[in-house]
Image (tube, rainbow, N blue to C red; front, side):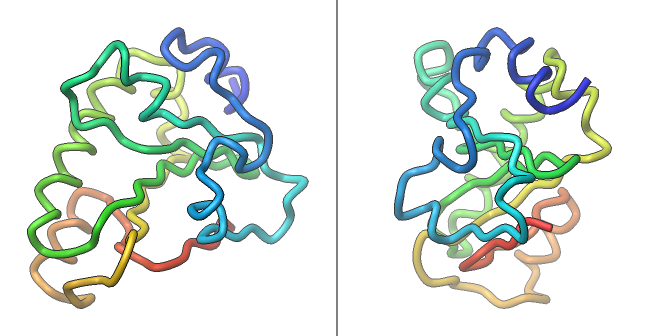
Length: 146
C-alpha cells in the first residue's frame, strides 16, 4: 500500500488529501522545499481533519507524502518549555496512527518539528537529545524533503 491508498483507507482523513503541499497554510508552505515537486504524493492537514473527533487531544499538524516517504510535520514554537507539548503530540499521533493503514508504512516515516519562530535551545542540548530519543528531527526553521 502506498501513501495515497493509506490516506484514502483511513476513515478520519480519507477526504482530506490535497495535492502537493496544498493542505498546509501558505506561510507554512514556504518553509518546506522539495527537490522535485512532481514526486509529492500529497498532504493532509491532520490537525483540522481530526479536530471534531479528538477536540481535546494534542493533535499533530500535517502528513506529507514525498517519493516513497511519509513526513509527519509539526509547526510549533520552539522553546524548551514546548518540548513536552511536542512529545504529547507525538504520543497522540502514535496512538492514532496505530489503528490506520499508515501504521504499515512506519519504515518510511519521519517526524519533524518546524519552528514557528526563533529556536530557543541548541543542538546538543538536553532538549535536542530528548527529541532525538523519540525520533523527532528538529526543531528547524526550514525543512527540505529528500
